[in-house]
Amino acid sequence: IQAGSLKVTASLWPAYLYPGESPGIDFDPEDIIEGLFRGYLLTRVAKHIFTSPSSALSASVSNGTRPCNAKIHGMSTVEAEHIAYAAVQARFGISSLDKWKDKDGLFVYSDFYYRITRLIRERRDGEWVDSLLAYFNE
Image (cartoon, rainbow, N blue to C red; front, top):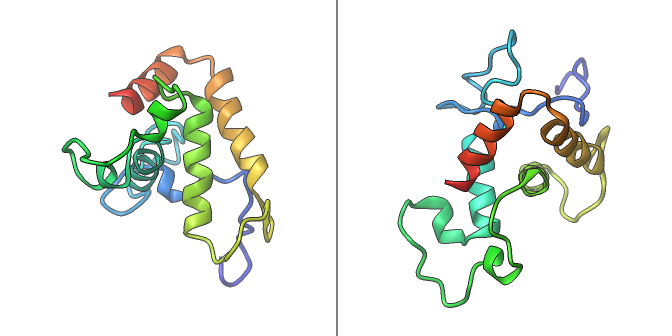
């Protein structure tokens, strides 16, 4: 990446989307869908956004002083758009940008968001989709 030989665009799945002791360590280049969207950072960012910051780091119930964002917005289940939103926020959080903009070099956040939602919504492997959504909704 630093040498410029790998161009980071929204068409690449970042390592943090995959599980593993280190992000992406469990990545299987023969099956890039296996484990996709089950990475530690992504799941913690989703919990932070939709339930509470404290729930992102512990298994216990949050003792927040206000209802979580999911409750405030009438969200009862995590869907493709929520996973994509959390992935975008995670990517922005580890970027060098100090304020929001849609492009970070060659990486376009809106392309990334829509690529994720399309993959989940249009995936023919219903078992994979059901398993992914169950993972986020447990």
